[in-house]
Length: 173
Image 1 (cartoon, rainbow, N blue to C red):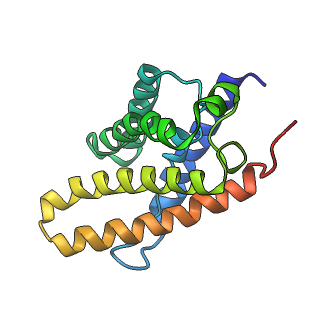
Image 2: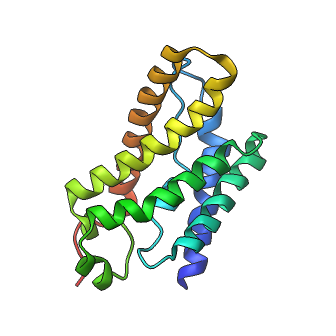
């Protein structure tokens, strides 16, 4: 299967899981909101250009905005992740590794520590921005902090579970 078709199917699968399953889970509390769809942006290949990354980020967020009827909230959060992602990869992954790697960010390609930092920072950026936009209409700062932390932890658990289920841990030769 060609890479663009594989990426498109991954995007559709993650959007459908988010829109039809995760968004309809009865809340454990008002602070827990599992978010997984933006994992598509984190798993895009190293070779994606900055401009393409921003375009893909906007399309990803806008698609979920259409499903959830949230005017631009997810699009802006995905644009922020798409902007931060190349900067983080530049800091966390040595240039030689990026140039030799034809794949995408994973535990196998980045190493456990770098991948944990990469996903944690991107998740915190995405959720912090998304919840900040929501918080501006409510105004409770404690709500903003607690929901950002709890949602980030819950989403990181989902991301690492998904990583273990669907991505190989060993480097391919």
